[in-house]
Image (cartoon, rainbow, N blue to C red):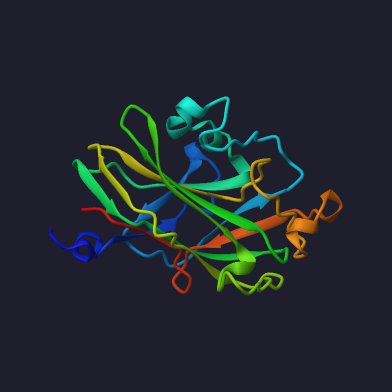
Length: 227
């Protein structure tokens, strides 16, 4: 096409789903499906004081040379995040455009940070990092105005950074979405208390229990520019 708007138009919407609310890990992952689920929710935990995952950031030693293909974090995520896969792609498929993720969320703290990571998982198990975005939940409606979350209030959080992706996905690859709360020395730590994050310390820490909904009224989803 000679028109960029046409090139990225009409993304494919896939919905988050799971069996019995279980999506806590690569080998017990939820699904990304074309049909909107009627019910369901998945839950994970964000404990700001638990650094046992050993998170890292792409491009930072000691794994900078393999950061884009390293999947040790996703493999050990457990209760600390959620994983969703598509089925195998029936043919080689171009991914050209700007992915978007929409999550319906509730939690038992006034605030937390959310991150969404997107990968291609090739037939031999190789993981290729494609896209990611981070949101501080208090800024879900505006980057200029904070709005804390009420206890168990269900809110919508959109991940739409406008990051352009262009890749030809291999036949039989799966697409993986990982949802979690970053807890790394390389990011400003959100202790989930709802206070001024820059002033918070460990004494302000609260463990957040975060629920992601995927039902008829609150369909968490991902828009993928598959061609």
